[in-house]
Image 1 (cartoon, one colour):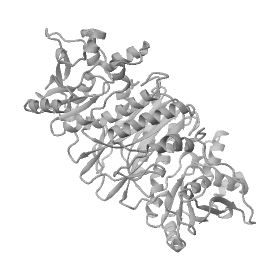
Image 2 (cartoon, one colour; image 1 turned 45 degrees about the vertical axis):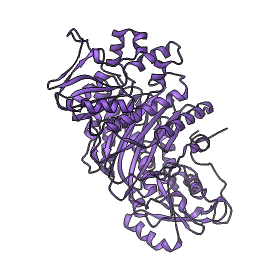
Image 3 (tube, chains in turn yellow, brown; image 1 turned 180 degrees about the horizontal axis):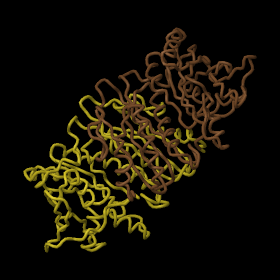
Image 4 (cartoon, chains in turn yellow, red; image 1 turned 180 degrees about the vertical axis):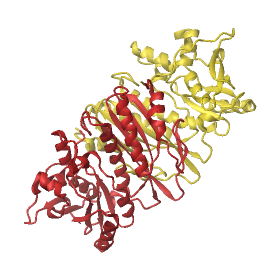
Length: 316
Length: 316
């Protein structure tokens, strides 16, 4: 049985080392030493997920790891960055070997799927939580910021929205799988779409806290606003069947955890975006427009506004 | 009063932004975007410090932040890296404004002292803990690894050892300041010494878990061992006065938290090291030698071995 931090690292984390041109010195030294390719800039973000706050108490390790990796990789996607490497700090109340084994397997799956080496970590005793710091690269000057939108530009989202919030609700009532639960437990960070949208999107953000909240972040830099057409919001059949159309739209606008992308582009990019969506096999739906005055309006087809149903996930 | 994550960031963390050539896009986007200078490699490490585990329950925010920054910056020092940037993930049970104010002030002090910009972070509700991921840079090929030591090379340490362990003991018995308490609460990461030792030290590691344990890490790669001379271990007068010489030596060998550097070098570097120590105003003491067989021996002047008193700090 693994009895201390070094034993646990040997048993569950050493096997996660992969060959990578990026890694000059891997885990096991004071620092990892990494080689950032010439001409590339480094994108960095950190996200903590805590049991009972960001994933349900007693959730399987796969869910905790999958959601932590998605939350972080999604931040890379939101910049148009390619995965480069990550470090992971785990706190856990005791050395639970089943949990560590499942954690290690899910990490291995992410490392392989996204080609992102784990280059360091920390293990300490505490409330169960995972903090990932993720690093990506982007050609110098090509990162897609939140602040690049201009009035008249169109607002797009990838995939479908609202699924994850309904999935969490179903999970809490005991459902263990199915499309909606899976969308909460195993979100897909839109890395490929983010990379493809470099030079196309004028502004981009990942949707972790709800679409209306994220559009607010895009608009806040210059006091812009947005008109959103509620009937253009992409909803899955599964969500509409489970929640009804009105409630589904509300979840899509105000609930988080979908990890899709929201981006803006001038209208002359619409053909290019349509082609991108087709080649990636990922819908990109035009849901609204940036306007030159503050305020974000979710407009129903009859012209009335859908009242604001929240401000995204409140961390405090 | 700051009521949510965004308000707290606005109130306590936005003011920490500093001008830096390294930062292309600062905090507030999905990722920070950083420009690593051409010809430099990136050094990365992550460390979590938890209330009640790595700093005492109810310790001032200054102590929590100072120790977290030192633990991370010390990992850069151990590679010979220059500070580049860092991200900080805080979990706290509620938005304690006094704590956040003191945290912000101590971060500002570290950012300025070490010239290291804070480029991102995360704030979540949970047991009080701080996770820093620190990034440094080093000219390509110049990072000083743990694994570079060879038999016959001499082992050095910077500064004095054992102070922090005694300082923690005094703090627990109610003492709030003084040299020893300060050595625990406000450790000095040896950044300048680490940089100066590039090309001089063959192997280097920072002393976070106790000298004997760290020398073990240096030796483990090729099955080497070490002979340590207990009477060569640098002890402060304050520690010897407070603990007596034998106990002081024991703390220096087996207790952690000093954040000094341990390094090895061939004997023909001894003059250079002496000059470095003098120009930095930081003692560098020769404490032993690497040998070609496993086992790390702390040898008293009379030839007997000091029995092994622990294996460094046990995280589990």
